[in-house]
Length: 468
Image (cartoon, rainbow, N blue to C red; front, side, top):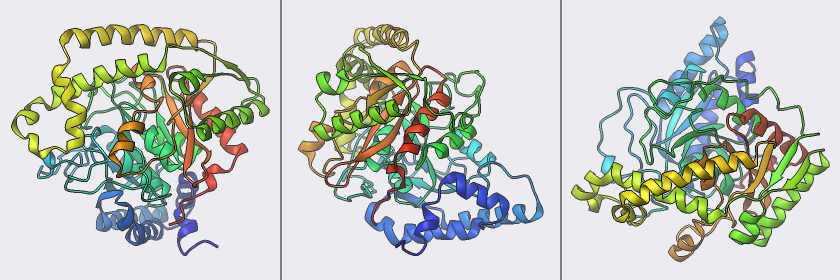
């Protein structure tokens, strides 16, 4: 039996938006339900850095009036969302979960993605926990504690968009934004059992987002279902001249293909990432094979494909990321090194020892790897890839974090820029989520959503929620 408010809290974004638009659900009642749930449970999960409990109700009241008076209603009208706290919102500080920025004044303007969600009718409910500057973590030596996995608070929730993943999975929010430089939308989506999309590089503006790595950063939607994610990307995607990497390409309706199934589609599977290059936990490998069989049973043609080794992609990504991150932080590292977490310093300081030769060689290799990968998948509609190689690990075990954090296959697609989505494919024996990625050709997010929706419709993993 559902607890009071639980059924409402776990409504899909699509359903909430539809009910609000028709007047069947008051945005005030819905917002209060989420606030009550946050108040009851987030003290144990720490997904929020700041809850906007007053302004969200004021804006919900305004949204309710607009429904009653027949005002223009956007596709996300009256629906609350959360922002990873490296994304700007006017009137609020952006702390990046760091002592470095803890005393920063409020921002004077929204980030492009914040502005787009507001324009679609969304209401900002809060700023979410992250790993420090989207890199260090989980850290216990910062002004705020790290977020914890809602399926088991002793386990890692993924990072760096940890608070966003936790809040969506726990029913605190129907949608949240994360950022993804080496997998940081898809990692918490994987660990928390939700859907996370890293769209094609340039598809979503990064203007107003604290940078980690200029050439690898992405912003992406995090939701509980595939349709919700597609609806959210509809609001986020589009050219932005303020972001020099923004792509001036047409934006389709990402929800248009969701019911078309996979019969006749051509899918590839990169098994060597998880069974040769980096040996996955057997429960992860078995879940991926089960998911591939589901897609085959739905009519997809599946063939195994080979790419460059996972380590080649990952090392190239790491050299670029750490070089650019160190360049961004070098002044603060010189002036205020004691204000960073130990975890962040451990990850960023190797950038001081990388040379210009290292960086340029990595950029040249990146072009080769990107061209080669896109040539390999040119005739495919999608590619199935592992996400994490292990179920969520213990959050405060430094040795296990050091061993398992990097055991993933997400970074290659920050390097190549291809769209990649993480979605749940089961649970391990301890009730912890498992996931796979679906990767596509550039700017073919709608096809990825189509494949993911077919799989989701044939399974029930997305209907399971953490037992808070």
